[in-house]
Image (tube, rainbow, N blue to C red; front, side, top):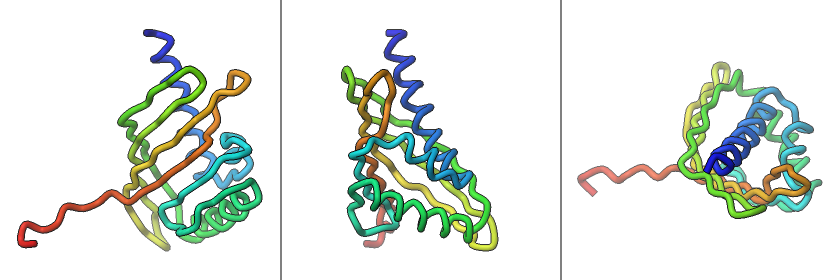
Length: 139
């Protein structure tokens, strides 16, 4: 049981490090946590991002918009983290807030699939989605 808790903590820490790298503008640190064959479905991008070069281009553009927007704060709220041998699933909410000049707040729900290779976890698929809002009672 203790091993499972440690693995879950390791996975959650690894995922948080991705957002820490994004927050500081460190694309290399972010990419270091992604597997070579990692795919991405970003909440603000309609394209399915496949391959290292496509991810690099996406992360460069994403970093530019983030830096233009303003200082970023975020919080990851993990809902489920499960480990099956060398595969893991992490489901969590990411609450974010950009300060001026381009203030914006929001929450997305994220599912990450991770693979352990040579004792190290890396993300093999990152999927973001908007959190649906319930319809008004009059609809």
